[in-house]
Image (cartoon, rainbow, N blue to C red):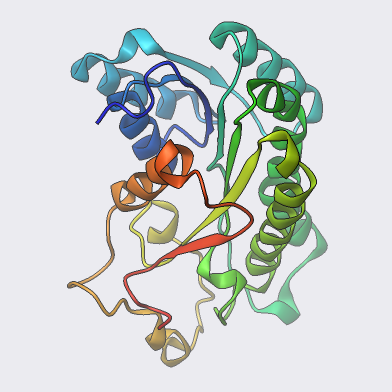
Length: 254
């Protein structure tokens, strides 16, 4: 499929996991992509794969800390200039940390909020003028199944993802008459790298986590599973989907 030929895309968190898989998928479907990540080595790996697949001529990479307001302003402006506009923003960057809530320090809380929630806000705010100018802009944000279902030891993380869902609903309505669509993906039971080391407390009660196993298949799915859904949502195939979240968890939370 070439659903993204001529479309201009900015993807955060593109140096690993779902962000990297989404970069590969949209490049394969014809997009011109600016891929950003805080991890320069990860971005090099993404670019190397694009070179091997013959899509690197449509890829630009840049190091970006999405929680830094001035850096976001600078890099989003540079991305829009490099692409000649912007059609799709994919806010895949985020961090996962766990702790007993009664032991959660303010710095721990603030770091999760700053990266996950504030970072999503900053990227979206700076990209909105270009997305609205396109007449059919799409924002794909990353929530999580933890925003709607109980994930023990992840209260701070879940709060940021719930905030992202609410933020997405609000902007979907606010800019609907200007042609913008805003949607969330809510992954769960995905082997994304981030989930391999969630930093659970040493004394975590794993019986509380037993219900988090997927119903489909033999275990967690790969990040390309989510990338495929993002490709659908951000293309014309998703043209009547906005202001909602799509749960991708293999039936974990049926």
